[in-house]
Length: 99
Image 1 (cartoon, rainbow, N blue to C red):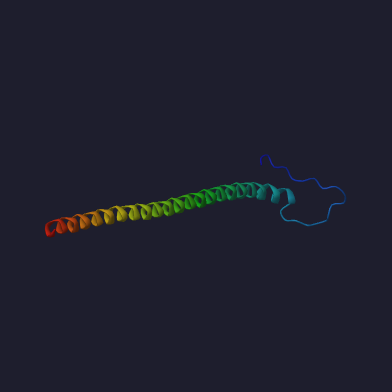
Image 2: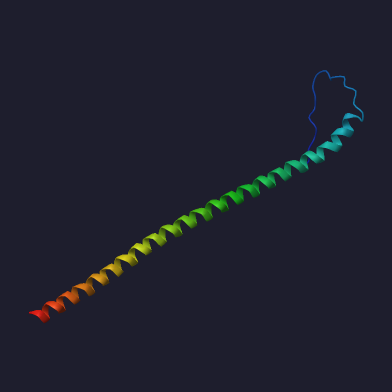
Protein backbone atom coordinates (compact mmCIF):
# COMPACT_ATOMS: atom_id res chain seq x y z
CA UNK A 1 0.00 0.00 0.00
CA UNK A 2 2.87 2.37 0.65
CA UNK A 3 4.24 4.56 -0.82
CA UNK A 4 1.12 5.95 -2.40
CA UNK A 5 1.51 8.22 -5.38
CA UNK A 6 -1.28 10.29 -6.86
CA UNK A 7 -2.49 9.23 -10.30
CA UNK A 8 -1.20 11.15 -13.27
CA UNK A 9 -3.80 12.85 -15.43
CA UNK A 10 -3.40 12.74 -19.19
CA UNK A 11 -5.12 15.18 -21.45
CA UNK A 12 -6.62 18.51 -20.54
CA UNK A 13 -6.76 19.34 -16.85
CA UNK A 14 -10.07 20.56 -15.46
CA UNK A 15 -9.91 24.11 -14.22
CA UNK A 16 -10.95 23.95 -10.55
CA UNK A 17 -10.27 26.62 -8.01
CA UNK A 18 -9.26 24.87 -4.79
CA UNK A 19 -8.45 26.57 -1.52
CA UNK A 20 -6.00 25.27 -0.31
CA UNK A 21 -4.32 23.86 -3.40
CA UNK A 22 -4.93 20.33 -4.69
CA UNK A 23 -1.45 19.25 -3.58
CA UNK A 24 -2.07 20.41 0.00
CA UNK A 25 -5.46 18.69 0.10
CA UNK A 26 -3.95 15.49 -1.29
CA UNK A 27 -1.05 15.51 1.17
CA UNK A 28 -3.52 15.89 4.04
CA UNK A 29 -6.09 13.34 2.85
CA UNK A 30 -3.78 10.63 1.53
CA UNK A 31 -2.28 9.64 4.92
CA UNK A 32 -5.79 9.56 6.40
CA UNK A 33 -6.99 7.39 3.54
CA UNK A 34 -4.11 4.93 3.97
CA UNK A 35 -4.59 4.86 7.75
CA UNK A 36 -8.33 4.22 7.37
CA UNK A 37 -7.72 1.51 4.76
CA UNK A 38 -5.32 -0.28 7.10
CA UNK A 39 -7.71 0.13 10.03
CA UNK A 40 -10.57 -1.31 7.95
CA UNK A 41 -8.43 -4.31 6.97
CA UNK A 42 -7.55 -4.93 10.64
CA UNK A 43 -11.19 -4.63 11.74
CA UNK A 44 -12.36 -7.03 9.03
CA UNK A 45 -9.62 -9.47 10.04
CA UNK A 46 -10.72 -9.35 13.68
CA UNK A 47 -14.38 -9.73 12.71
CA UNK A 48 -13.53 -12.80 10.65
CA UNK A 49 -11.58 -14.26 13.56
CA UNK A 50 -14.45 -13.65 15.99
CA UNK A 51 -16.92 -15.22 13.56
CA UNK A 52 -14.75 -18.31 13.11
CA UNK A 53 -14.28 -18.62 16.87
CA UNK A 54 -18.03 -18.32 17.47
CA UNK A 55 -18.73 -21.01 14.86
CA UNK A 56 -16.14 -23.32 16.41
CA UNK A 57 -17.60 -22.87 19.90
CA UNK A 58 -21.14 -23.47 18.63
CA UNK A 59 -20.02 -26.69 16.92
CA UNK A 60 -18.22 -27.81 20.08
CA UNK A 61 -21.32 -27.12 22.17
CA UNK A 62 -23.55 -29.02 19.74
CA UNK A 63 -21.15 -31.98 19.70
CA UNK A 64 -20.99 -32.03 23.52
CA UNK A 65 -24.81 -32.07 23.66
CA UNK A 66 -24.95 -34.96 21.21
CA UNK A 67 -22.34 -36.84 23.22
CA UNK A 68 -24.33 -36.31 26.43
CA UNK A 69 -27.47 -37.69 24.78
CA UNK A 70 -25.62 -40.82 23.59
CA UNK A 71 -24.07 -41.37 27.03
CA UNK A 72 -27.44 -40.82 28.75
CA UNK A 73 -29.11 -43.43 26.50
CA UNK A 74 -26.27 -45.90 27.06
CA UNK A 75 -26.46 -45.43 30.83
CA UNK A 76 -30.25 -45.84 30.82
CA UNK A 77 -30.01 -49.06 28.77
CA UNK A 78 -27.42 -50.50 31.17
CA UNK A 79 -29.54 -49.51 34.17
CA UNK A 80 -32.67 -51.02 32.58
CA UNK A 81 -30.78 -54.25 31.82
CA UNK A 82 -29.63 -54.43 35.46
CA UNK A 83 -33.20 -53.90 36.72
CA UNK A 84 -34.55 -56.54 34.33
CA UNK A 85 -31.90 -59.02 35.48
CA UNK A 86 -32.72 -58.39 39.15
CA UNK A 87 -36.46 -58.86 38.50
CA UNK A 88 -35.73 -62.12 36.64
CA UNK A 89 -33.63 -63.37 39.58
CA UNK A 90 -36.39 -62.49 42.06
CA UNK A 91 -39.04 -64.24 39.97
CA UNK A 92 -36.74 -67.24 39.48
CA UNK A 93 -36.05 -67.46 43.24
CA UNK A 94 -39.78 -67.18 44.00
CA UNK A 95 -40.58 -69.95 41.52
CA UNK A 96 -37.91 -72.18 43.06
CA UNK A 97 -39.41 -71.73 46.54
CA UNK A 98 -42.92 -72.60 45.32
CA UNK A 99 -41.83 -75.56 43.33
